[in-house]
Every structure is written in structure tokens, then in C-alpha cells.
Length: 503
Ligand SMILES: [Cu+2]
Image (tube, rainbow, N blue to C red; front, top):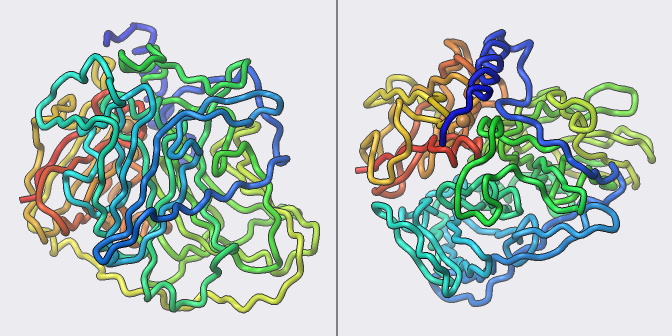
């Protein structure tokens, strides 16, 4: 794609603003796509995605079948929005796993386009990782996808093997098709994947209907109620976003679990709230605002890949695309009828609010947040057997890692299985950096301590303009080809990915 001069000038302007530091920090790198029609706020109930049921349970594994297909849903009153969803729902059904109990998920593709499914945060064998050119095409699909090194093509359906040999965590699954992840996730190909284990179940934390996953994303609507997306080609044969949208696409409607600005009735009790940023490009600065304007404490109990060793209390949390934060919020001392708004301080106007909780029932709450959660091996700089640097940078209309466009046959690193390496990320713009397979701990940010919400095991980290972030990554579980990439989905589609081989 050729870079238009106007785009270059705009990007230069963004750089100058972004370089001013934390005060000017905001929703990230991207451009706002304005809706032609917008749904009302706080009128829809919060949907809770259905739990997927196994079609077969054998001695070795639980077997699931999900069908990727189109469906029409009503998001704007009186209009239909065509979504692409797992089992025709957005978000898809929630897959619930137990540590140590393998799962086989058959993905059937009844969409008009190829797909690849990645379990974000999953420690899975390489051929089930959802590599971008490991494609499932619809039956009879023509023309065949261009062959690329290491690419495989399945017709109509394929099985993903998930050993679930990892600790309790909030994961999510989403489309990862080469060059088209942005538009395909935007249309709805995302769902939750929750793993539990005995250590987590033994804790007196809120559970069942007081354990709420919130998959948060932004979208824009056309006048007919359809999702708007600035693709070059909505038939999705030619990749890429138009003009300045190469920087990322921001919607102006905030959806939670697929519903615009929903409301949810709560008890006078603690709730476990699993925050998932499933947006293409938008960063959020989240807080729970009580009616008197004070902020309810968000007691963080987990991050991307499981529980923390001990709870950490925050007034606000910044969340970049791909990240998860597991928090407990207590509605216990609020009167019946009180409204608590989940706000986004990086938003303006309508995007400054996410959803609303309404205190509806007085109950006795027997949950608590223990002082100790689950043990976490704390990595130190001396544990690293190697150091590597990955530079995320804009170059002539494409997005590069270490100066290179994504090459499916290439590899930028070969870490050894069961070792820890120090990976240093540098950037020009905001880039949410995500590693497949390997979980990491954030060691430093701009030479300082990480943000207070960045402890524990993670797989995605918020890298800000002209900032260096160091992480200690542990390569465990499987050998083979994996990748790291920017989780701004427009950057990812425009080549900001790289492979590494675990040897
Ligand atoms: Cu990026």
C-alpha cells in the first residue's frame, strides 16, 4: 500500500502530541470512525454469553463444536446488524475449561471468508495456536488462499487441541486470519475462554452470577444499522484499511458483551469483574464512579494469565487491546437504586462511559478477598539467559518489527524451551505487544517500575510512544513456531507481526 502524503503529515502530528508524556495520554493510536446512527445508552440489559456445552465427553477430552456463521441481531432499535459470530453470536459462547482437562474444539466455517482461530493466552501446540496462515476456508471456497510458507488450508472444518495445562485464567478466543483480523474481529469473531483450577475454587471469591466477564469493545454503525469498517474491500479479498485508518480504528459506540452501553442490576455485594479489552485499537482508563462522584476501589485479583499472589487496590486501571484485568468491586454499602457507572477517562463524550450498574437487591454477602491468592514465582533480571530487542515502528504506510514486514517464513528469535529471556520492546506509537505461547512478567517501563496493575503473569503489554518496556518471558509448554505481534488489529493486519521458534 502506498502512503499518501496527507497520511504522513497526520502521523507526524500524532507523534508530536504523543511525545508529550502521560498527561496527553489517551485512547491510543488510531482514528475515530463516526457512526451515522447510534444506539441509546444504559437501556439494554447486559448480556451474559451462553456457556458452550460439550457434544461428547470421552476419557481423554471434552469435545466441542462451534460454527462460525453470520446472524442478524438488533443493536440499534428497529434495525438489524449483520454479525459474524461463533455459533452466530457475538460474543461467541463462553468455553469453560478446568486445568489439566484437555478440550478439542471443532471449528466449522460457514462464513464467506477464510478464518483462523487463536486462543489468546493459551499454552497450546503450534498447530492449534491459530497461526495467521493456518486457514479454514468455507466449503468450495475459490480462489484458494495464496500459498505462503508454512501455511495450511483446511476445508469447512478443523479441530483445535487445547491441553489446558495452565493455571486458572481469563482468556479469550478470536479470529486471527492473515491480513484480515481487524475487520473479522470487528464483525464479531470473539468469545471468552475461562479456565478454573482447584486453588482458585478454594478461595472465597464471588462466583456464579457475581462472577461477571465484561468483553469490552468499540464499534461504529452505518445508517442502516450495520457495522461500519473502513476496509479497502468489504468482500475481504484485498486487505487493509483506508487512509488514516491504517493507524487503527476507533468506534464511537462502546459495547459490553455485544450490547451497546448496557445496564446490569446488582446485589449489595462484591462482584468479580473480568475486564477484557477486545477492541481493535482503543485503550481505556477505567473506573467505577458512584453517584456521589467518588470512585469505588477496584481490587485487582488477577491479570492476563491468572490470579495475583495478593490483591492490589486501584482507583483506575488502564487497559490496552488484548489485555485482561480481573477485579473485585464491592457494591455493599450503596443504597437500593444507586447507579454506578463504569467510566472511561480516555474517552470523550459517549465513549467516556462504558456501562451502568444499578443496585437492586439487599443481600448478605459471605464472600471476601483473601490476603493471599495463589503463589506466583517472581522472576528477576538475573533469571534471563538472553536479551533481545523488538522495535515496533511505522514505516511508509506499513507497520514493522525490527524494520521488517511480517514474513511467515521468517523468525526473529529462537528461545530455548523452559528458559526465561528478557525482551525489550521499543516503539514510536502506542503498540499493545502480545506474545503467543509465552507468558511474561513486566520488569520495567521507561526505566521505572511497571504500572501498579501490571503485576502477575501477562501475555499483552501496553507499549506507549517512545517508551521502552522490559518483560521477562518464560518459554514453556511446547516447542515450535509462535509469534509476537502488535494487538492494534490494524497494525497487525498491516504487517506488525514476527515469528519466533521455541527450540
Ligand atoms: Cu501497533
